[in-house]
Length: 328
Image (cartoon, rainbow, N blue to C red; front, side, top):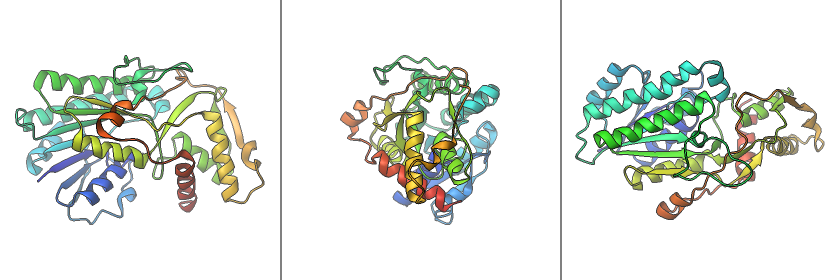
């Protein structure tokens, strides 16, 4: 019997992971720990809240005594760690909060594992979900692989890089059985409005200006959240302890071109004249330390575990737009 603790399970990616594990593993107990800050929403989990193998606890992961009590009371066997402050703009405004949650919160969980698990048994997993932003910025050529040098440029990416290093340090120093994955930008239903794609869609729904940083030429790789969950589930079940896996969506596009695609699809859905909503685009002052390009080389997970993204961007973004329209 596995008793899996999933942190940040009321957030965007976390809620998708919680639902996946609750539904796919009825013999596992799934314990969702979330502090329900602004991006956490239990409405994301309405369809599984009454499942017999699902349990929710409102706990701040920095409350080490509460975390340790949960480990002992529920005999936690595995951790999938998604809880994080994740908005780059907010990290520029309040970097301390990001260090507190992303670094010290991760340490709180690692310490609980070290204190609670027999580390020589190899029966446990601490799976840390991270970001491609830890690698820094790319020019027009190249991509990040698992051996790429860390070079974070924002307080957010610095905090995630630090947490990655602590997870690896606990593996090397204490033999904690760990897995790490670094993913590209996620999109899909249930994402908080502050993020780039939901912000565009909400602006279109409400006929408001769509802010684009700088010249809009910054490039991101986009990964549909269900494809990310496929990879997470696969890594949890078949990943090699101590290894890192990069997860990419295989769809690179500039911010301005992405905005125009979303506008085009939105206008088609709403039967607006073609290009009508382009007038809502508004270029704004670029944010400090804005990375130019991210690109993920996911050949390792493809070769070793057989994962590739299944959702073509055009299909995923249409589904996402329709979901937000249905929730307005």
